[in-house]
Amino acid sequence: MAEANGSGDRSVAEPVTPLVEFGTAVHTGATSLDGTRGHWWSPNGGQLLFARTDFTHVRPWPTAEPAGPPVTRTALAGTPNPDVTLWLSALDGPPVPVRWSRTAFEYVVGAGWDAHGPWAVVQSRDQHTVRFLAVDPDDGRTTVLDEQRDPCWVQLVPGLPARTGSGALLAHRDLRGTRHLTLDGTRVTPTGLQLRAVLGTDGDEILFTASGDPTETHLWSYGPDFGLRQLSSGPGVHSGTSCGGTLVRVIRDAERPGGRADVLRPGAPAVAVLSYAERPVLDLHAQRLALGPRRLAARLHFPSWYRRGSGPLPVLVDSYGGAALQRVTAELDWRVLLSQWFAEQGFAVLTTDGRGTPGRGPDWEREVYGDLFGPVLDDQVTALHEAARRHPDLDLGRVAVRGWSFGGALAALAVLRRPDVFHAAVAGAGVADQRLYHAHWRERFLGHPDAFPPRYDACNLLLDAPRLTRPLLLIHGLTDTNVPAANTLRLSEALRAARVPHELLLLPGSGHQPIGSTLTGQLLDRQVRFLRRHLGIGPTHEPTGHPVRRPS
Image 1 (tube, rainbow, N blue to C red):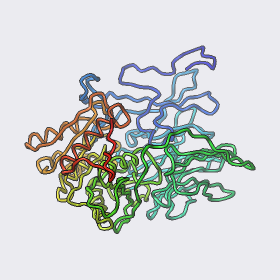
Image 2: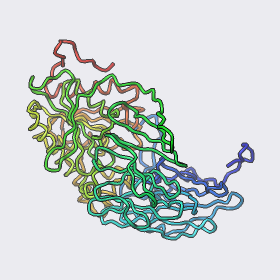
Image 3: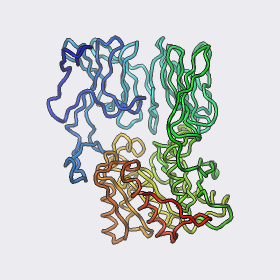
Image 4: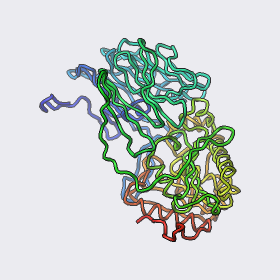
């Protein structure tokens, strides 16, 4: 800490060991709109609320990168979490601890300081209970302002809980398939409108995002004087921020990468914010679909040079499928362009958001509770067959699947458990053993592994390794800090032990997402060559005879 002119530099708290950190927290990104934070100033700048994180009891795990640190400390499923405490500092005296039942609520998933004082959001290890606490700025005592319970897990919504300018409590409630915004316990959003995030408050006016159609996200506001208003229109993923009556509105749609923004002020015309983002070199040749009885949101890409009825096309299923990410939205992002790039290599590329993905409400999300893969894989198969029924050009005798992270585990699982449907797979950075992933995220869906070992075994790809009969390419970055590379290394070892042929590509110096790095061209080329070889596809040409452009 220092004075405004840079003088008087002094510490507020200092760690006594390298395993203790001040001013950082592990899980506050779950509710924060600006990422993980660990310190929060009072509005007048006279006090500081900060986190102390102690990794002493977190088990060290060896890393896979020879040039990197020998171990990393990540709380994996079923293992001890870091010990996170909160402290208050008046800057001219010793810090005061914030007190709550830390044994019952070991996760600190949010904190902050508004006009009404400091606050914290704490969560039980089983994630069935979340409490919103008011913190006394003088002595650190806490008072429970709100408590939420759910037999599966309490969903953490960015920007919530919170308080308006007058002190009304903002929270959410999941009722009969809809995630509602609530004000002092009363629902202010209608059935069918799924709350996404609360972006902020301006006095008693609330700015938030919500979805009716899961592929679109719109900007909304609510105020006691005017009720509910929609502030955006047209297909897209909308967001924004407001203060003092000025609204900055952001739209990301299918027209341009990076989106566009405008500024709206009362009594003045909208002012567009200039964007100099370049247009992609690829044009999209895709259609959005709603497939099967569940109307699964899907996008089907074709090569730009392909003409319907001109012959069968091999299929590449390119989905994520997990709870953290939608792939089928009204937004043009790099993942959409990547799917189109694969289509230009001679595939019909199908991306599907099945059960568990965000945007369709709490019941849809919780259908994967206790079984991360079964419903997801079933939905991918259903979408594939329904897409082929509508488009007979899709060749179900040549179907590959690729994916990254959760999608990587899904790709490997697809050829392990449904070789009758999927004939080759590229699996990048997937979690093969669910015990080798972050405790907070994995235990949300499967519970503690000591309490529910059958759930973890049912999702363990290592146990399925001897069943592999289809070509499989495994890829992992050795400096991946999200999914430990041990997952892919152990799956490869299980396949070798079972004498099952497969290919393994390890990326030294690469983290969880190598796309966008200097490896991009080589990595994509390697995947395409693998898929073509094992699906029996020769070099792809446009009707004019000019070869499709390949990555450099």
